[in-house]
Image 1 (tube, rainbow, N blue to C red):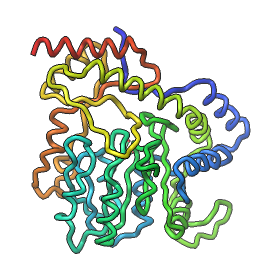
Image 2 (cartoon, helix red, strand yellow):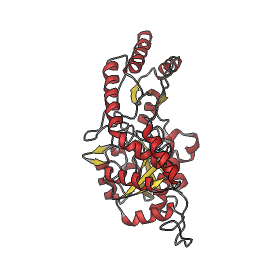
Image 3 (spheres, rainbow, N blue to C red):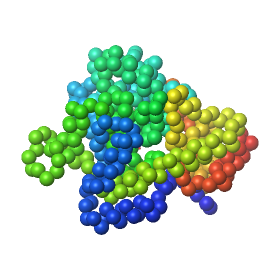
Image 4 (spheres, rainbow, N blue to C red):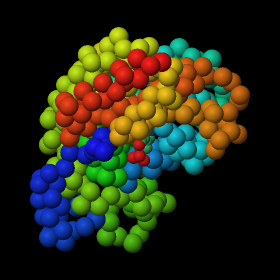
Length: 364
Ligand SMILES: Cc1ncc(COP(=O)(O)O)c(C=O)c1O
């Protein structure tokens, strides 16, 4: 049976050429491609300062270490996110406090943050989920009022702008991931952005054994190894050049799905945040027949993924859950399915999925 996978990175000869050059040059750790990749991301996002990180999870951890918030400080995080938003905070010695999200955009509900702020609150970690921006402009005003640090988890946000400003450039520090399922990828990898020179200098030291550059054995401060390899960055350079094509196809395919599934059964769709561009991460649907549809599509060779399981219900985070119900995050998990969206999908593949979805709704 023909299997339609959730994701498949768009890889061709250009990645192989750059990898080949990197290997032939025999500079395998961060080198010319790392520099080029980082400069491209800085240019594109308009970020003043940036450092690479081995992956998004460690990128968030690095960003939080650099902020150096007092141990046990509370940090407000949306419950509807990937586990790494919360786990990075816990590993950085912070206490995550979970807030609900908006029913239609799935992003942090800024109107619910204020009631959670206590004397111990020191930061907010908004997450830009599924390829569009949260209400980060509104959130920044609130953070300013309470003097809270803002760490943007823009893991899924490459290419997303709110009112012409790239996500990840609003807060004190942010992270964009280049994991294999992201819009452009280095396999594993991430970038940490900041506009604060002092914070940038801390990031530089923390990520490279506490020294400003390699080649010295004098370490002015403590630091670890958060570097990437030049081979990964060679892939990143090739991917970066392809972003316009990837985006164009994703937007077309998203629209094609949408037209085909409009009005089918009880399906509901995402609402894109006003003022935000959209870089579709997958095709998202919500239905009360989630389980039936997931099983049916899997049986028909379509790889599906559920929406996130809420952070406040995670077994591993139980000690941070104050038993408050966060109904929207819970409902999103109960109803949400991600359908495949990637460069190699044909219109026939999408039509096949649309027909399968329609056929299930005929029977329920
Ligand atoms: C919202 C969010 N935060 C953090 C991460 C962690 O990034 P990485 O997989 O690069 O560690 C991801 C995903 O992959 C994510 O989707």
